Each structure stands twice: as C-alpha cells, then as structure tokens.
Length: 554
Image 1 (tube, one colour):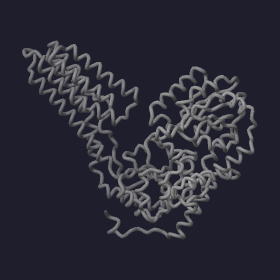
Image 2 (cartoon, rainbow, N blue to C red; image 1 turned 120 degrees about the vertical axis):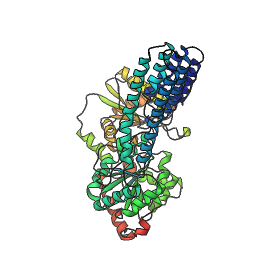
Image 3 (cartoon, one colour; image 1 turned 180 degrees about the vertical axis):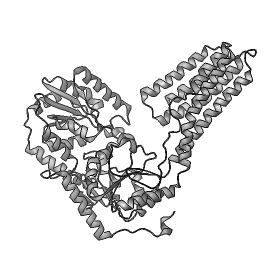
Image 4 (cartoon, rainbow, N blue to C red; image 1 turned 135 degrees about the vertical axis):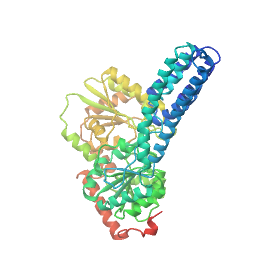
C-alpha cells in the first residue's frame, strides 16, 4: 500500500512538472527512489512490487512523453518524432508486460512436479513483472531533462537506442519462455503423463500440504521422517497452494514433489494412481477438503507439533479417519474439548521427530558455561490467543537472563513469530539487537535440525505455550514457562533451575504424558504405525483400481 501511494504521488509530481517548472520533476525522482528503498527494506514480494512498478511505469512514461512535447525546442527536434519514439518505447514496454503475463498464466497451470522423471515438459516459471522497470527510469527521468535543456537531437537517438536495447533484451528471454510454454501439451496430457510415471513407482502414501510461506516449517519438520518412510513405502508430497513456492523452499529430497491446482486435478491425480492408500495431513486447513472428499484413501491427521494451543483441538479434526497424537495429553485435550472427535479416532503414535533431538543431545560435549535458551512461540491467529510472551515479557525475560554470570543466553524465536502481527516482529528484532550488544546469541532456525541443535545444548529452557516446551521434555531438563506479564520472580526461578538436577521423576512422567513412551526410538514407533495402518486399509478397503476411461477423462 505504501509503495502504491508513493507511486501515485510521484506521478502527480511529474504531471505538475509538465505545466509548472522542471524542478518539480526532481520531487518525482525522489519519490520514485523512495519506492525502491521501501521495496528493499520491507522485502516486498517480487510479484507485489512488480505490479506496483508496472502501474507506476505506465503512468510515468506517459507523463514523460507529455513533458517532452511541452518543453522540447521545435527548431532542434521534431516534437512528433520524440513523441512517436516515446510512444514506441511505451508500446514495447506494454508488450513486455503482456508477454510476461501470458508466460505466467501458461506456467500457472494445473500440474508441476520435481524429483520424478515424466514424459512431459515442465513449464518455465516467470513472474509477470519483476522489480523497477528498466525502461521507465531513462524514459521518465532522462528524456524530459534532454527536452528541457534543448540538447542535440543525437542525444535523443542515443537514448532511444539504449531504451530499445533494454526492452528487446528483456523481450527475448520472455518470448522464448512463452514459446516453450505454448508448445507444452495440454494440462490433461501432462497430468496423464505424470500419473503414468507415478504408477510405475507404486507410491502408497500421499502427504497433503497447504500453507503460506511463513508456515513452511509445518512440512519441513516432517522431511527427515518422510525420507525414512519413503525408503519402504514410497511417498509423494502433494502441495496445493496457488503457486508452487515449495519447490524453492523445501530442502533437496528424493521424495517426489507434485503441485496441483484445483479439485478436479487432485481427483484425477488420486484416481489415476490407485496404489495410494494412506493420506497424511500435517496441517488442518480448509484446502484439505479437496482430498478428503475423494473415496478410497485412509485420511490421517499428523499435525506439525504438540502443544496446548487452541488449534491443537480443532473441530475440523473430526473429518479424518484417524488423528495420530503424541501422548495421553493430546487425547485428553481432544475429548475434553467435546468437538465431535471420537476416542476410537485417536491413536497415540509418539512424536517421531524428538528422536533426532535425543541423538543431538547425546552427541554434545559438556560445556563449562550453562546455556539458557529463550524460545517464545508465535502470536497466534487472533489477538486473544495470547500465546507469545515476547510482547509483554520479552524485555524482562532477557534482562533476567543477562544478569546471570557464567551463563550463555540464546534467543530462539518461533519460525512464524511476527508474520501476522508486526508488533511481535518489532519486539523480536529489538531482542536480537539487545543480545548482539550484550554478547548473547540469536538463532533464526530455518529447519528443525537447526532448532533442535539449540535445544539440545540448553541446560534450561525459558518459553511459553508451544511445541518447543513439549519437545524439550524429552531431554528431562529444567524449564521455565513464562506467563504473560508475570516475570517478577523470573530471576529467582532461573537461579533455581540452574541448580536443579538434570533428571526429575516428575518431568519424566510429564514427558511420557505428552510424548508417549520414549524407551524405544520414537521414529520406529511411528513407522510401525504406518505399517499397521496400511495393512488395515488393504484388509478393510481392498486395493483401489484404475477407473474406466470414461471416468478417467474429464
């Protein structure tokens, strides 16, 4: 929004320059430069910033043409020649935009994929408009100045050549991409080729994922588990967002990654790969319905963390055949919520990821300094959630921790902290700055392994309601849960936690209640549960078969 306002202001200032004085044009230049700076500082998405620049560039090139027509010296250069040249540049600029949109729409088709050999080409991805438009800068700024100072006509010719080169230089790769995408077979043919390739692999498990980029951790936290699962049962990850951003976000993997758009494409895809028997859902979103409605699959919600947040007992959960939960605490949470989830839908499978945390903890050498980690969770979807302690207590927590001697302090925020409320992001940045000056450490973990590496080294965890606390229970180490606004006794609590024994019977019992039996590797228990479920599906539902051609073709 700020960018669009600045662009409108720049256009108005440039328009004023056509009827007042050329110096007003400098205001427009400053405003345009500000839009670029705002883009860099705010890290505006490429698609959003491109749209704003496209609209602004179209207006500003038109204004530049008007400036030249009004101010150029008729004896030095033909006004109509200059206007024609600028109109040509404007037309080429618009052609560039149209081509990018066509490439984008052709790429944004029904299906895309990675990590699987398919007898069909994949489209070239091109964002419709990207960054400040190169043509707009010389045309908008340089051309009017040349006109105002009555420069030699050759300067116009040189400017024209430069601008034409800029436009043509961008048109060539865009045209190639468009030609490639237009030559692709139909989406139905590409889907048929994709499903034919997958049938040869005989995958049994489909992982359905839908989320914004800030919530990518919900699938990345499962990747190591899915890699192990893929060794035996063949897994396919299905993403269904508007754009396949997951291709650039997920770490390299051998698991086939498929992106589909639309309920019809998803239905065709599942019908044409009859070996799919089990569908796993890491998130409870409305997009799940497009797969849940397809008969023949056994739908299991696996979640992306264990905590006492409200989302951990979502009424929509009753739509799944089973909900795989970590321990008795989750079972009680669902049943006490009285949301329609039956007890026979709940199956305790443990938390397979914590096996990695335990391995990391065993591999670490003892440190001469005690380590305290402050790990606030994210703000939640609604203001009344009040999950994160950072806004009300973050400064006080850090103050209490930094006053301890011979202690290292690490700040480990939730990956989604501040993504929905900028106040939380600002509070987080403030803590990072404080720690930097105080000699502490801040870790913005992009993967679960990075996060677990910090938790594994922690002697004491300071946190609030969230999955970090539950996972940390597996280590049987002291922790402090920060309640919003209640930090008066935090310093005393930290001192006590630093002197507590690392093992506690009460903590061990709490860990079993939340994480299940940890006496055997948690991942092995999860894999056995997958084996049991697949056998149950084959026995009770039989093996799905390919539909007749009349049904398969839509």
